[in-house]
Length: 389
Image (cartoon, rainbow, N blue to C red; front, side):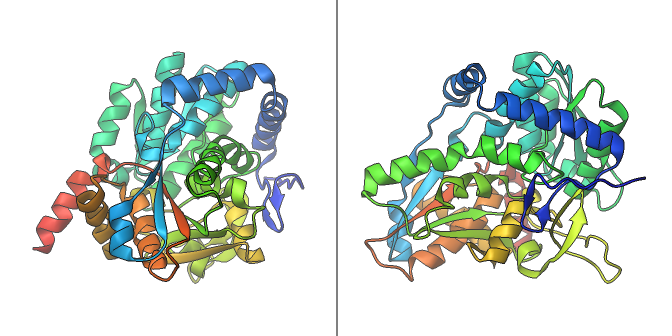
């Protein structure tokens, strides 16, 4: 297998496109079409229509006064991606990419999913545009997120459990990439996170940047100044790169990504190539991707987006860890104090933001990207709390 590397799509040493020639050809076509349509007025108009009329944007930037009072210090604002149709940020990218797939003449869509939210978003987008949909999901994740599996099937998708490896998100990505290589002539891979070979990280950031485009405008309206910090959970990194995008060139704003301490890719990883791109990766002694675990299925990935890797190396963004137990406590705290049940993924960001707020002045503000709602996690949390008693 000959390997090709393209200079485009690199963030410093990270990113790129380390794939075989067949897949490189497919990705070149995808890149050409993305570049052609992303600034096309008709494409933008259709995307904005679906963002508004179907997803329900713009969503609020909610002042969380009760957890602010509990934390004592900076005001905590929640960017409410949980209020989107399908309950998470994933739909922003799914609609953007499916509009691209439609213009490219694709009739079959494949995707990977961990927590199931991207799978649900993809199945939703396929339903509205009448496309055939196959979702790859680690076998363990299909068991943890059985309700989302049913949702995907209800929406008309075929869910394929992947039992190889650990049966988690990495293995689902492997299976989806294999499918794409075999069926690229009629298949569009709608990748959900800001990972993978170029142009996927660039595309996902482009469609998720709507999060920070809105939050920047909203915080200036509410506070008259930029936030001191933007906090977001990081697995592959799609919600975080969307939440950071419009603040990267604002040096006064601290960017903080929160990883699970059980899968600390950016905190403890080493640069390596995984899934056709270079990023910080958790490696075992043989140099292979390490088995990972998080109570949040969407954070359970041994790699991370290349731009996050670059932001860490250059010091523009800081990456910290929160334990599953701390996230579980934040899940309950936000529910009880604000009447908002967050996804376990987002609970990691909430947990850290509450600690951070207490170290800051009351005239400062923090934006937490509430990347998803916790409906999908309620049964899992119920069982965890029951077994802990």
